[in-house]
Length: 214
Length: 214
DNA sequence: TAGATTGTTAATCGATTAACAATC
DNA sequence: TAGATTGTTAATCGATTAACAATC
Image (tube, rainbow over all chains, first blue to last red; front, top):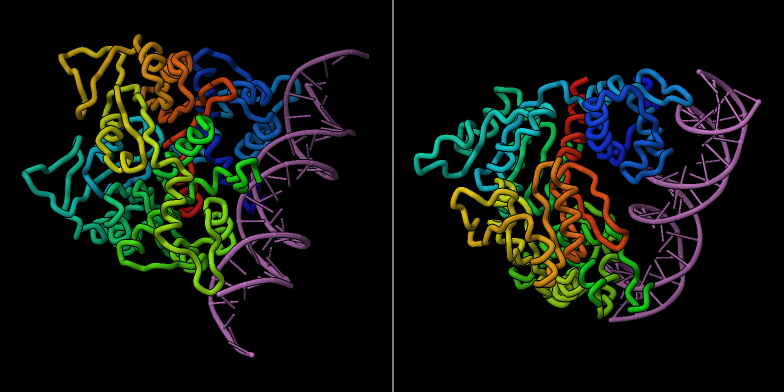
């Protein structure tokens, strides 16, 4: 338990939340009013105790024996807990195809993410925006982040430039980094780095196939 | 230890491997001949025993006390272990901006991934290929996978269609799925699903900011 | 030799799962 | 009441880390 009287929530639990939310939204759409932990556990192939604990971590009202949890309430509590109802302004560094894909993905907006600027080392060739987001020169990163009080930086640049732009983001007072570059980033302790290393996933896949195919 | 006399390697260890590989490539380029586990651990902010165990899991030759490991040999052993030297043919389902980004990302080719076909429910509008990869109709998924003995399916379709195309891939005899859709997929036990759920990462970021900003 | 590093065994830590009384 | 489900405490499991003898 922490001081806010919620149990401590692990990263693993946080990462399961969007799966719960997705199921809850489906149930809500179907006008289903209540749902039990074992039911959700079955749908997602998880342990029911784990689901119950995860629910307990975010829920203001307790579940009722025999019936379970109120779908809408659980959904709201969960979204609230994750901070989806807040709007988190972010900048993205890099304007390649991955950056475009992230900017274009409107599902992130449903989760409170708002990309307000894109940066590129050479914002040349007359390209002034990507999908409605202005492209600025990389040397303005720190300044803009500080001035606009941006808290999230999304890194999509090649591996070799990632640490450099990371340092610029940190200098700009960013608090969290979503790192799509396949490198380890060194940051001060208070800064959260969420790595999205696709080569790491590929390693798991590749090794599995090697083993499976002898 | 498994029968092939390598220690059992966890998913976590596999996911650290690309970070080691990256550092080893840098060292190799700098013509550095040997490297120790504590050195790599420091660079990547990891525990040195963990690094040593990971190295032991993939290394054919043992490291030498005082000097450490031979850079080139360790690098080769690691790439070999992950199966990077094999070519893994894959198909991708969906032709949106994320699919384009994945197809265009040539770094995956360095890791043995070769995308041979893209599928779309409505391969219309005269678009017949993305970045040199042919676009085919989704109803051909199972057939093509089976005929070409494809082992990897990459799912980039919207959440609502993910399970459907997943089933088609499974029917086509696929062994591993790289899932970019933000949903849980139900598959037979022997099939590996590697989830790349960006909304799960966003949940971690979002919750961290909520806590940090009170 | 002294010191750095190795590999391995034992201890710790933390997440998941099982067991169970309480409740509707 | 019986049965499903809840929340919680205890047990298990597995990954990480510490301790230490062996080696160059």
